Length: 331
Image 1 (spheres, helix red, strand yellow):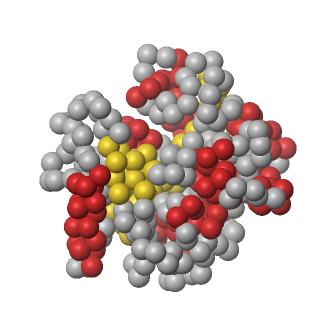
Image 2 (cartoon, one colour):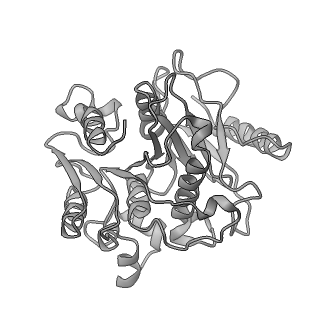
């Protein structure tokens, strides 16, 4: 187990490294991978080289909490992110496609292992270049408020395209995939990719932020009660948002004909984010003529990712995604 004190010390060391001019490393305690056979990524891209805009008055301390009690299985959650960044997983042989991955965590924190690193390793083993996004959290005082994660997601897509040649990827073969609250980030990006949510700082910001395909997986989507995930809604919009604010941040209300082809997965027994979130998003996509593929499973619950899907029919969802992505020219 990694305790809070170790996490804070590790984070302070990362801050010193950043001030020395290096890219901010992924969160890590010590020099070894926490699980044998699962190497930790070393390559990162800071989104905002001169600092993320609109920082809160009180400086944040990035903190890593290890929630797993199984030494063979990590389950880290990260919050207090002041240096949003991409953690890169390169395949041995790139197939030209890339994925921007946004883990969930209810906007309270970012669950980097089970909804980030694990799917990134899986896709990288199949030729995809993967970028796990450490996005800023809307409840931590950023000036952009409910748009802060979208700012990071837009900027991330643009940087991936700017550096496509460096990574052996095609700039028109970049997917967005997100889980739970990260599915909200993914859906927000897919529907509001051209919303002016930050001030351009360089040429990269003139590039398209629209994903070529999107895959919100058991997504937090509606911001209206009773479908909204209560914790995500409160941290994103505050305790008592009005109807206009709810609509502005519900992807189903922002779908247009330009929304990219979308792949949806949800378990019907999800006790945390009702399956109607995906069904309503599907209906909105169909109404605008957007290609959408939907897979619903009777058994899976919430947050299954890869590890909790094992042994159930829902474990097929990544293969279904790859097959569908190929029909869209990726993979």
